[in-house]
Figure 1 (cartoon, rainbow, N blue to C red):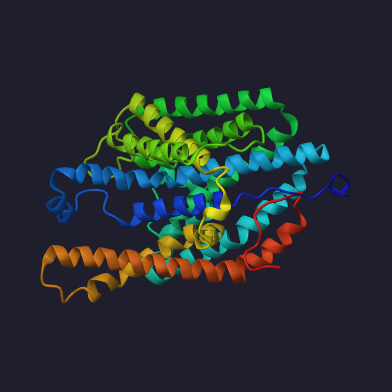
Figure 2: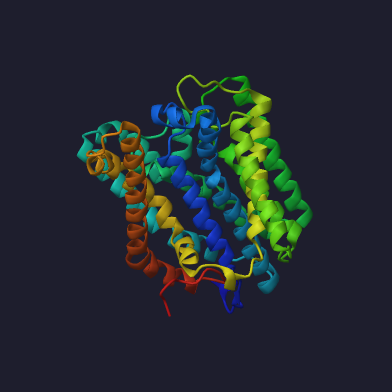
Length: 396
């Protein structure tokens, strides 16, 4: 307790990053709801444009890369500010904050996932995998054995973040800026060596995408951006920010369309070591560019509803697979569109209704979860803050 006594309280909050969180979630949501290939209706309607459309939907999966990059940037920024303000990084407080922010909703979602397996009669099949998820090793078990066929599958990415948190405060506490640059270089080297051998081994997409070492490249990007900015905010004109935004999206699209990342459909092949290395580098660069484009935007110009949705984005991300599962299992879109005679029109309406209903229900569940599950723990978390960050929506 000695290191925590009388620590100064400073505020660092950027509302524009909440907007970026919501965009990252929306990209992931579209990745999971829109067709990524082999869709007869899309093939007929889009014709030659279908491959580009499928690549765009696949590229939306890099919304997760944005989450990782943003998380690393904020953790680095907050802990460096804490070290500067109080002379030390309070390790115990850091872990208490992370536990209070992550664990309540994480284990609640894990329990919901277990309930789904019981209702489906597959609890015994997934019992071991859920055990790995319970100790934040969901990414590794998914990489080795494949993702679980369960709405709680999104929790694998939370386990990657938890692995990052194991080392982040210690590195930032004891390393100076030069050593932090070296640490990032080591992460990038490890990620690319891993990608090289995964490409040589011709493994499937699941062995690559769920690999923590591969995803750590995004964390390195976030830390490097924090170190380069040195606490300053980018001062760009609107046209420059739009250019960075467009370039980031182009990086994501090129990674899938030209470098053939996310080859998770039947018949698609591992593109090989160098395309994997280049593609994941583009994804990490795109995430950094997108974060740079948003950082420093005047928050008075941003819609309040989008900032709020960014604040509850943890819940949005956790619950969206559950609502998609619900809408598809009960074929809600198909039932509501069954009177449409034209087959393509019926398919489009079915997909649109499924997307809209899933998104609406996700927002509702996330808002309720934020208010009744997360907020009590967020108030406890705030007691352990040295640098005040994101405010609690609806709290005084």
